[in-house]
Amino acid sequence: MTDVIDEELLIDAKNICMRFRLPTERIDNVKEFFIKLVKGRLKYTDFDVLKGVDLQVKKGESLGLIGRNGAGKSTLLRILAGIIEPTSGTVVTRGNMVPLLKLGAGFDMDATGKENIFLNGAMLGYTRKEMLKKYDGIVEFSELGKFMETPLKNYSQGMLSRLGFSIAVDVHPDILLIDEILAVGDAPFQKKCAQKLDELKAGGTTFIVVSHSNAQIRRLCTKAIYLKDGLIVDSGDADAVVRHYEKDCT
Amino acid sequence: MQKKIKANPISARKVAVILWSLVKKNTKNQYRRSFLGILWTVLNPLLNMFVMAFVFSRIFGRSGIGMDYPVYVLSGNIVFGFMRTATVTAMPSLVGNYDLITKTRTPYAVFPLSNVFTALVNFGFSLIALIVVMIVRIPAGVRFHWSGMMIFLPWLPSVFLFSAGLALLLSAVYVRFRDLKHIYNVLLTLWMYLTPIFYSVETLHLPEKYSLVMKLNPMYHYLKYFRDAISGIVPSWRETLICYAAGIVVFGIGLLVFRILKKKLVFYI
Ligand SMILES: Nc1ncnc2c1ncn2[C@@H]1O[C@H](COP(=O)(O)OP(=O)(O)OP(=O)(O)O)[C@@H](O)[C@H]1O
Ligand SMILES: [Mg+2]
Image (cartoon, rainbow over all chains, first blue to last red; front, side, top):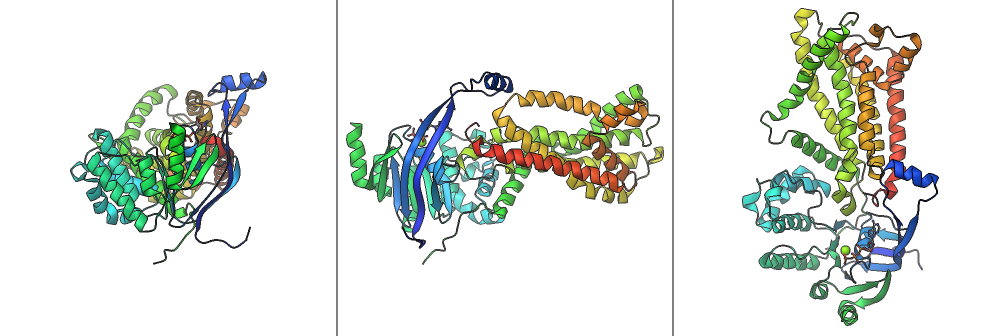
């Protein structure tokens, strides 16, 4: 342990534990709550999703998170993004981090594509003026120029994801947290997305990727972590970890 | 080239940008695809006033109210309406913005607060309606003071704080207890009738103790201050103090409850 701050260390998470407290029945009205409280029957079961995960990511590295459904990958990503606080453990992050946990979170379905680009940009902290500079690039990348004046509720699912993705990758963050959003759009658009990510990677952006596509992890990531039952079973070189995971899955 | 590595705080600027865009979105969405659009924000309080002034001037009689009755009703209605719109729209705002709260790093308070600001914008439009009515009623003896519009400005932050405090409180509690919506609607109706919007406490000739109780209602004081101001009466220090005391206390409580509930909130949405 040293006190020297390693400038190259973008994410340093130590001993992350996450415990969800699940009420045995969901209580969402006052009457039930008080009846249960008075009777002393407010029962919970504790559920440990992460049981002590350590994780370090250096600048320029890309980390893949793999594991079966419910292994806690999304939970870990949300903790790293600072959206939820872990039950115990510490997370230190450096650099401009953009969580891409869901494409188009906060889209307003009644508003047009154009309005939504500005709205979504605002959620990432960009003023209208700044977004105006990015606007043409975003529209061009999304190939949705014809639909900019159309309300989003008239978009197809793939078009929505394309718009969300196009806005998200245009912000040039230091760290990009990606949760299973890479399989967007049709084949030509996917190819374009992959190229864009390679471009960002070459530009020095650090990725943390959750994906069920092993090929994707191999391509994008230098390192990987295999999560199982809230613990890290294997970590290190992406290729080796993915092979371990594939072996477990068969 | 070495890129500058900066920390990743949620800056005040980001909060302002988000707040601004949410207020714009809310304001636009109120009247999306309606023929008269934003004009409704002016028309709405006007039409309400006509209904109320027509109905209630018959029931309560307008004698004893020192102001022109339509102006009296409208001014009371838009102040109470500001508080009502702010709190009613803010209550489900955290639940409604589920996506943003669980998937992005946005400070939660911007959602209820954006609704309070939107209500403030509406209040601004209602003022146009009020000014129109005041000018129209000049022949009926209304004295219109532009200065009155200035006098009420120092009051505005106090009623804003009051509404914002309630909005924060309601939105956070609503995440856990959804029946709050029904409870609050009933309470709001009661509150409206207990607030002198279309009558005046003085002309009800209540026993002393009841009228004292009615004056415990902060909305009573917000309405009184506003009406005094637009009539060109400079409200007393005492009134100003009451308005701010209520505003600051309620905002403080709201903020406190919000901060306590905030930590666990993401798990219940
Ligand atoms: N807010 C919550 N309250 C209670 N339990 C939760 C909550 N969020 C997640 N969980 C539980 O945590 C576990 C891990 O969820 P998580 O979403 O992290 O899985 P995942 O690894 O991303 O899975 P997938 O591959 O399906 O995306 C799940 O069993 C889930 O039920
Ligand atoms: Mg997941």
